[in-house]
View 1: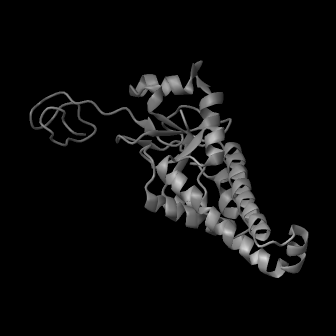
View 2: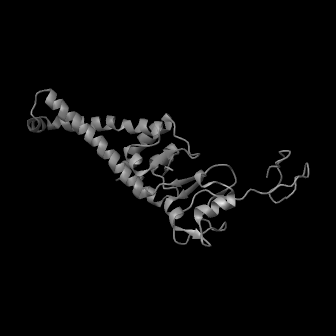
View 3: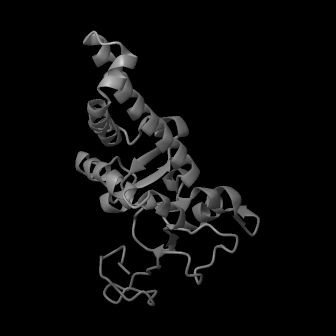
Length: 231
């Protein structure tokens, strides 16, 4: 551990700095990620906990924070008391259900915008809608897919600007880096490309978040992002 007085790095087992003799104390281990489960408890010997001694924020599962306590003390308060962190410093991971509903809204908006664009295009060309759909369906389908792809780029910019898409804004969640800050435009682009990679094997890249300790999808992992509750 590092001496607060002279900065000399001593062994963690020592209570006194070997260089200046100042008293040093080991940092209290913090909980980084927690896997939800009825058997989960605050115990540094349980392998479900990832302990660390740096200054990264604490990532906790939303269900775990809300539903569990330790010796009668709510988990969030217990960790706050033992690590001297304020509750505001916690990054609480968004549940899969919130993410799913937010994703459904985002997809609905993207598809609706693409559909309305085609309808407006037909009307602007003086073509009756039913006639146009029947007559030009072989053209409209690929055009619709391309328009949907282009429309989805709005999510790229929304995530880079505020971390919130339409659905995330409604359900109170946002995308962040591991340190809790907004993601960069580059990360958002990587994440956007990752959407389609996650969707390829029958949406497995999305569903994998259910079994992941950090509730990360494939596009979260490749862009090194997390989705948290927005306090």
